[in-house]
Every structure is written in C-alpha cells, then in structure tokens.
Image (cartoon, rainbow, N blue to C red; front, side, top):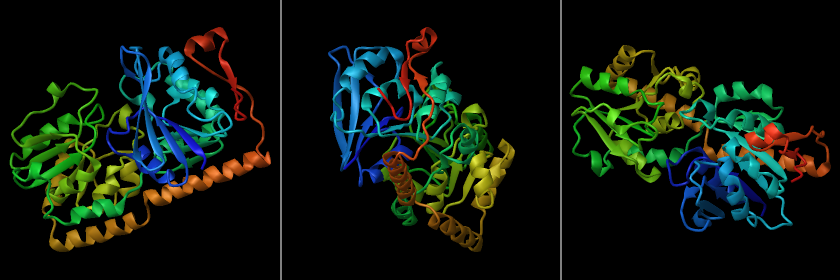
Length: 399
C-alpha cells in the first residue's frame, strides 16, 4: 500500500471539510500521513500522533518555536521530526494543501506531487508574505493540481498543464438524516421558530452586518449560527436576542441542526477572501431539502442560481428569506425534487475515485518515463531565494 504524505494548514479535528472527506476515502487505498502545522511547546520537539480513521494517521508537531504555521523558522525542527516519516526505500505521493510547507518536500523523496488548492489562501486575513512565491514554486514542481471550485480552476488552469476542477461534493446519506425533522439537536430545541441557520467557520468571510440587518428587520426570526469564531474579534459580532451563537459542533451533529431549521443561510461577505470560495455546505444544505439563501458568491450563483436564492445586497437577501419562509407545500416539493437531482450527480466517493485514477495514471506515466522533463525550480525560504542557497527540485524530485 503506497503512502500519501499530506501537509495541511487545517487541523484534522477542526471543521470537517474537504481534506477529511477526501483523505478518509483515499485511505481505503493508501496509507495516509496527515501533517498539521506545528504547535508551540517549550519542551523538547515531539510528534503527537493519533488515528481518526483506518490507514490514516495525524501527525501534530510540537516545537519550541513561536513562529506560526509552516514558517521558515520551523523548518529545521520539522525536518528533524519528519526525517523518518517514510522508510528510505519508499517514494510516497506528497500532497499539499498549503504551499508554505514546500521546503519539506525534498526529504520525502516523492514519486508524485499533488497540490489540492481548496482556497486562495493569499486572499485570507494576514497571509504569510512568502505565500505567493512559494505557490509559484509548488505549481512548477507539482504533477497534478486540483482546485476546489470553478473560480479557483480559472485562476490556476493557465499556470499548470495538469489542473483539474474538483468542486465541493457531498455525503448525501449523512445529511439525509436531517430529513427526520423530529431529530433536532437539543441545543436548539428551546429556540423558537422560524429558525434560519448557518454552520461553518465565522471569520473575515462572514457578513456580520447582514446578520444584524436580518435580526433587526425581523425580530421574530431566530438566527442560529453554529461554528467557531476565528481570526476576528468575537466582541464585534452582532448581539441580539434573536441571534444564537452555538459554537463549534461535530460533523456528526450537523444533520440534527439542519433538521430544526426552516431556511439555510450562506451569509458570506463579498470581499477578496470570498472571491474564489466554493462552499461545501451548499450541497449539504440541499441534501436536507431546505430552502437556501446566499449572497452573490460566484461558485454558488453560477451553478446553483436556479435553485439557491441569491441576495445581491442586504435587502434582497432578506426578501429572499421572507419568500422562502412563505413557500407553499407544492413549491417546497418542487424545490426538493430539483435538489435531489443535483445531489444525485455528485459525491465525495466519486470525487475521491476520480482523483485516485489521476494519481494512478500519473504514476504509470512516470514509471514508463513518458513524461517530458521539466526545468529545475528553486524552492526554499525567502532568504534562501534571495541569497541563491535554495534547494534545486524538479518533478524527478531530487532532494
């Protein structure tokens, strides 16, 4: 069983999303080693490990270095911690969710390099200054590039010859549990109706002004927000008697929240950080056969604008919520049928299978030596690039 070594900017036990969905499925065919960003620990460096699924191990580095993420200052410690990750006679697939981990590539002696670009990380709040340079280097050495939606695909397709669009998929069976409307999460049973809900990360992509406008326009509406607050000051979130912050909950619990909602919300701000997002939850909401109202996110509006109501400003968003709450039984049934048709056309199983086919094909090409050689690429820290001391890597991936 071949190994996939994954470097990710997200923690496995954070919000359950694209990496977890794909890698648990790929772990049926590969041994998956998931490397998280390091945590600060004043003691000696160590790797904390645990296995959340068969054939999948999470590695959580603990280092005495204060620098965040896969920072250059972390690299010497991480290189030592990860030196024996894979036996010396094995050439794993190395899979990146963040270009910031690229300096760790060489010691892995990879057979293939995959860049699964699920977000435009450079557009998020406080990106590392080296990110764009490092992504350029990663695109130069990657064998395969996957993108998390059509907008990202359009942004990356001309930068790599083997770029593929893999939009967010859905585990329909999991979210179909919400069709039992009696199985409501206990935390919201005391909250009145109608309930308009959102689950996900509450950060700089979240339109807090829209939530405040909704709560003020309709004091009887109960707005339920499920998810962690990160990178923004929680004190700046709107506070109203009809806004309910329920915190982060497990993936397993999400259908119980959906079961108790009347309308599902995608209240994203329209800014640089949301320009390329492809929200996983849009299909999960559809699997619950509930009305969905979104702001004008490109990867929601263009493929799903015929079934998801799009609010181009606060007033239109609120008007769509009003209309959704006033749907007739016949309108709801017709909507649900359309949603089932969409859901039937996609799944995380099919996405993971297609990715695996591409991995196997790329591996066969490399074994056959049919791939054209690519020029060397300099990979290293910003200071190494400036001084000419960067390591030389190419898709033969000489360490």
